[in-house]
Structures are given as structure tokens and as C-alpha cells.
Amino acid sequence: MNMLQSGGASAAPGMTQAMPRPMMGGPGPGVPQGAPGAPQGQQAASPPTLAPSHAQAVAGLHHFAAIENQLRLIMQSPKFGKDDIKGDVLDGLVRLIGSQDMKPTEAVDTIKDFPVAPGLQRQWVEQKFMQVNQAREMMLAHRQATAMGEDPNAPPSAAWSPDSHGDHMAGLLGHYKPAARA
Image (cartoon, rainbow, N blue to C red; front, side, top):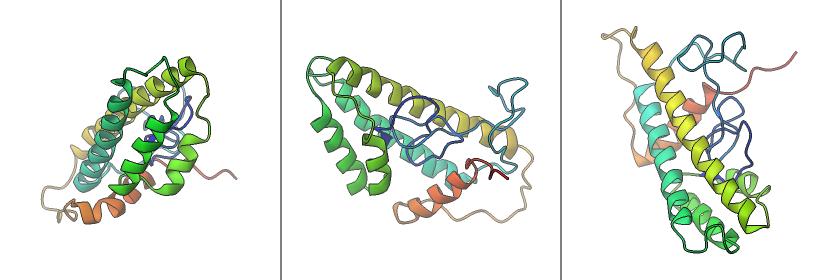
């Protein structure tokens, strides 16, 4: 869960600079140029040409839901916005790592800009929650916009399972990595 990463254009947990980062995760996913919600007159960091596979989309949805659930737990705490919640955020990250929904390196990247003041912590958590939702919606819009033309006779991609989650997330993230700069 990349819920602990800073605001701005962060990607969903596990997502790189192309997508807005959800609360626990890296920078967010980029919207392919011409996709619904893509800014007019601006180019995406690296417009993906292929949609995420079905299994990659399932892995992404699982990933986003896990992060969102941890963020909800934090937001429902009576301490939220009033007292220091860094311990609660760390507990959420540990649960995400334990469930293999986040890599330890992602958790470290996520928490490094976590603020000290309770009011700023509240804003940080709420921003991560919004970023997770935005990343999920962008991924689904990309899948829907590009999957319509898929060949129905093409062999199906490998099915999602908890054991293959990491592989499918790596493939999904490959769709949203920023373009290499020359």
C-alpha cells in the first residue's frame, strides 16, 4: 500500500510516476493520451499502447482495495486528525507487506514524507486515499478503452491468484512507467 507516499502526482501503491500515487504507494498512473479523463493538449509521461490484461486489472483492483482498506481503518480512528497516527500508518504498511500487497521498499518510499503534525497527517492520509481511487479509475478507464478491440480468439492471459499477484502487478506497472528521457 503506497498510502504513505507524498501527495502530488503519485502513483497507486506500487505504481510509478505515470499514475497518481495512492496513499500508500509510489507516484500515480498516467492516463493514456486520448483516454477518458486525459488532459487535452498534454502528453502523458509514457502513453501505454496495450491495455492491462484481465489478470493485471484484477491484481490492480486487489492492490488498490487492500490499500484503501488500510486507509479506511486509519481514517476511522478517533485519533485521526487529532493525535499522532504514525504508528497506525506503520501498522497498516506492515499489514500490506505481510499480505504481499506492498513491497518493503514501497513502504519505505511511502512513509518517508509522512508529516509530524496531526492536521497534516490527516491531509496526507486523505490525499493518499484520493490517489488510490484516481489510480484505480484511470487503470479501469484504460482497460475499458483499449480492451474493446481485443481479439476474442486470443489465448487468455494467466489467471490471477494470490501466488501470481506480484507478477501481475509488475506487468501492470509496466504499462505506466514514465518514458525514458534521452
